[in-house]
Length: 433
Image: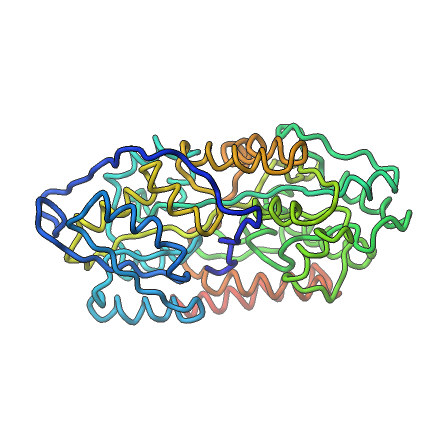
């Protein structure tokens, strides 16, 4: 996955729902998996095998005639391996993970993905929000389902805010702070010398996390459905200038890599951090008095929170279509199966029943600090989630955007660097077409 959003919640393994009966699925005349015939399906993914072991074992127990074999591909080689195998007849793959964004469009246009639109009604009924299902559609047809999801939170250190005389943000998810309020509070922390790092993003220079900032400012995704890149509009310039100024003002640090940010907050060196659900476990492991609020938005702009994670797609070239579809249904639509799919990774399940059990565990994990975690996340998923765009050229758009953000963080002019990045990425997309 391009941004590795399947981060592990460090609060420990989740205690999830009691076993529920599996909901079956059949598709007449398409492959094996019906009756008593024993079949084996291959599930390709870019995770350690342990990540999927529990859901596979649960599925095989409920479907003793179906065996699921994992094909674990290193993340760095995942896309190229799928392209090679699927391009040469399918390589025996029946189901495989697909990242958010343009990967689904690319693979759909290459003929790799089976149309699973028949699952849409059940998937929407089971999901925390319908748009997390609809985000995996191309031209009105559904090609993948998300077993997991993410959102964004503003984590804060209460002791540091007290030292700086800053009133903490409230925990009503419908009334988050603005970015302007956050910046002013972080500046006050800096002026008071209350923390070494007033404000951190969990993932610097990451389109996954920055997309919501630009969207809130009115800039859109930065790329149109036709693949036209635009970072020079007023919204993107507002967002990029805000990002640039965080570092020139000293509110946020240069030279800190993403693997350090959680630890800096955990050890009491940062006042604020925007992070995903995993931030609750990271903060809980530290001896700090922390709180959680909804992610901010720009004053006068729309509330926007980054989301998405891996999806699971079915191979259009599978010879075991029925069995593969049963596995997909179990891993995403069935509450027991979806809970099992998320348990090892510790990431948020998308099924509403599995989600309810997941957030109940997190809500209770750190007393008052995490008591509103579930309320915040559910509100954001249903009201402010922004999905990475399903567009041709996303494979070059995202890394190009990340490099632009890195350069701006390190001092490049937001206006000129944005134009350069837009021109460069657009040229690359044109060559792809």
